Every structure is written in structure tokens, then in C-alpha cells.
Image 1: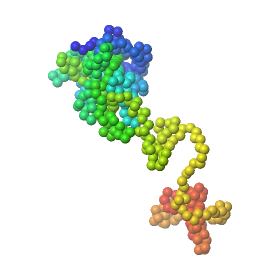
Image 2: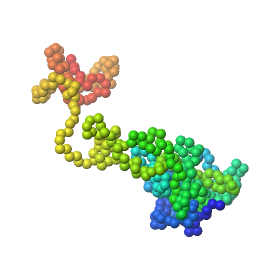
Image 3: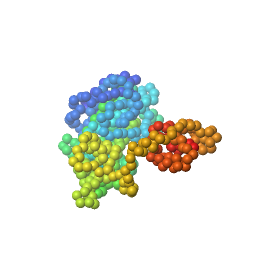
Image 4: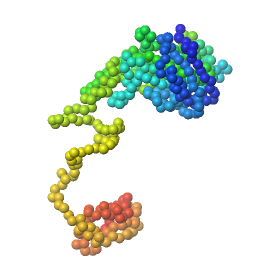
Amino acid sequence: MLPESPPDSSSEACSPAQIPVLNVSSCFSSPDTKKRRRSESEEASMSCGEGDGPHGGAVGNSVGGLTLGSHQLLTWEQYQLEHWGTFYDSSYQILSPPAYHVDTDKGFNYSAIDEAFVCQKKNHFQVTVHIGVAAEPQYVRTPSGPRQVDHFQMKVFGVKLETPSHQVTIEQSQPDRTKKPFHPVRISLPGGKITKVTLGRLHFSETTANNMRKKGKPNPDQRYFQMVVGLYAAVGEETFLLTALVSERIIVRASNPGQFETDGDALWQRGTQQEAVFCQGRVGINTDSPDEALVVCGNAKVMGAVMQPSDRRAKHNIQEVDSEQQLKRITQMRIVEFDYKPEFASSMGIDHTHQTGAALHHSYSSISVFILLTQQISSYFQKIGKKSTKGPKCLFVL
């Protein structure tokens, strides 16, 4: 027989119209939620908070619009939606799916290098579920038609990411420190109220495969688990899935996850030169999200020179020129505005017929002088002239 909820559990009435969009963040303000004794192995504690306004839409860890803020760790998505059952009230009216939110309160740490949440097999984790229904469900649809629900129950189990059909047993520690497989917890769903179910002292019965590092880096064959938290309706010896959420991928290790995060040799390696080390990737100082090879958020003190390679390696016969003399040549140029003839612009594919450029004389000596200066004054034309999307940047008019 499934364990009942503790006698001190309570539910606070809420308006049925608000159920799909309730905010129950007040449920976390109770000081006794941090530490609570449990007299039974599968004990579940239940409470609720009154909604204070709409927050619309299912986000993150919930379905049915039940939102609790952004402090959650694991993210969740709908699990086997095609198998969700339909339930009815006492008048055989179809009820909308319950507002359903899952929160992992403790036991998981995010590993940036693994890009996944990690937990230690021997460490406990805790799951808190909030459920809201507008009316108390009485019947559930079955292959043989609607049948009366005996009771509702919560199930928590793991699945392998690579083979979702393979379930992983989740265990629960007992007061005498023994471990037993977690059994479904029997709960009640009063209409117009929010039910809070807390499942503590949980841990996975096995670890994920291929957890060991490869040359200090994450194993490319790393395997993952996912956790499923579902609400079921019990009818006789059968159970029917009503709603469930599945977590993102999880790594379960036998050793402390911190040992994997503090291994500095995983990122820095010895270089080919003496007393040299290198890091493959970006380096950030005072920032955890560098977008360049080196990002320093703060001041840098340099005792020597900062070496910056130039294109001098690709050039030779470099000579200094008189900048004033070059400017004098530019001032002697004749800058004009003009319009291309329509037939010429059409044949050359020029969209903007109005241009600005240097006017050349018929003298060949002048042409050679001006052509010689074309490269030197290209930037000058870009500033004083109107840039054209097509055609040359510097135009000469004969």
C-alpha cells in the first residue's frame, strides 16, 4: 500500500479560474522547508501558496503556466506527451491538464566543461513538485472507457539518454541509513488548490558510463541520464499517466564532481618551447565568457613592450615620404562633380549617375601624375566624395 501524506499537510484554497496561471513562489518562504524530518521512507510533505497574479504560458520547469521564478537548476520538458491521459470531474466534464511544476532544490551542480549538470551518486538530491487543478479529478479515460480514480501518485525514475526505454532506479535513504528503491508516493489533488510535494533523500542507484576524462578533457563517449517526474492516476492495479516532465541530461559520478572541475592540467598543457604552456581556446580574466583569444576586464600592467606583428614582413624597399608634399599634390588636383550620360550608365551598370572625382587634362604627363596618386588619395575621395555602390571608388574625367 502506498504511503499517505503526513497529517500536518495542508492546502490553501485558490480561485479555480487562476489555477492555470498561479504564482506559488510564496511556498518557498516557509522557514521549515530547509530542513524537515520524515518518519517514513517515501514521505511527502504538502503545502500551498495563494496566487497573486497571472504569469501565462508554460516555461522552463512547468506545464500549464505554473511559474516559480528563475532560481531552478535543471530545466525540464514534457515527457511522452502522446501518452498523457484525460481525466474528468464528478459530472464527467473533461478537465484541462493540471498546472505542473518540478524543481530540483539541491544535489546538482552545473559543469561548464561538461556542459551538463553533475551529481555524486552517494549524495542526496531533492525534488519539489507543485500541482494545481481547477476541480478535483474523479475519473480517468481508459481503453475500456472512463473509470473512477482510486488515488493519485507521484513517480520518480531515471532513463538513459541514449536508450530512453531503459529505466534507472532511483533510491531513497532511510532513517537508519539503509537504501531502498523509491516507491510511488500517494497524494491527493483537491480542486481549486495548489499541492506541494517534496521528495527528499533521493539518489541514483548507478552511475553514468564513460565518466573518466580523456587526456584531461571530457570523454567523447560520455553517457547521460535523465530524470522523469510524473503524476499518475491509479485505477485498481493499473496506473495511467496524467502528466510528466523529463530533465535535461545529467552525469552521475561515483567520485566528487569537484575533483573534475579543479583539474588545472585539463586546460593548460606544456608547450613545445622550454618553460612554455598553452591553452586551446579563449582565456578570460575577471570574466567567464571571453569572446576573443584574451579578454581582460580590468587594468593590465606591462613592464616590457607589447609586440604587435605588422605587414613589414611582406614588403621591401620601404622609404619614408614627405607627407606635406603629398598633401600639396592633392590640393593641386581638380575635384569636380558630374553626371554620367544615361546611355553610358545603363551599359556600364552604374546605378548612381551623379559622382565626384578628379578631372584630368588631355596632357599625358598629367594623366601619369594623377594615376600615380590614385592609390595615395583613395581614402581622401572616400571622405569628400559620395560613395557609389557600383563602379570605381576614384573616377577621372577626361
